[in-house]
Amino acid sequence: MSALGIYCADCGTECERVTGREAGAREPDLIDAQVWACPLCPEAWAPCASDGSAIGLPAGEETRNARAMLRERQVERLIGEALRHCPNGRPIAEERIASFLAHALKLPTEEAAIERLNIAWCREAWRALHGASYADVVRHAQTYRPRKAA
Image (cartoon, rainbow, N blue to C red; front, side, top):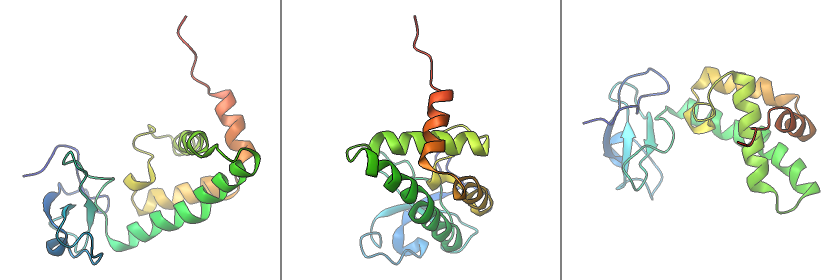
């Protein structure tokens, strides 16, 4: 039985809830845990949240590695720039970077979350963030700031 909206980022197939062992997860804390897995792609899975939803979209090892590299080398680089100016600013920096990335990819913010990207979108996200500085992110946030209701 699958939940609506949980599909494989690699092939688009609707996913099933299984144990980590059945999905091919190697992390000790996921072996006996519930995960969402693609029935077609070997080792394409995503952890299951406490409410039963997937944390991100299930994906194979290559896509999971691309997501991790994108987060480590691009997103954390920008967050590091932000933290030099405001040591307690991680939450706002993450929010601004997510908005900047969603705008660059022309995707809704929820769909542009790194945990939901497939390999092609990871490449696009890398290109969007590669030349960007945190100053670019702040300029974007100031330009596209949501208006307060009167």
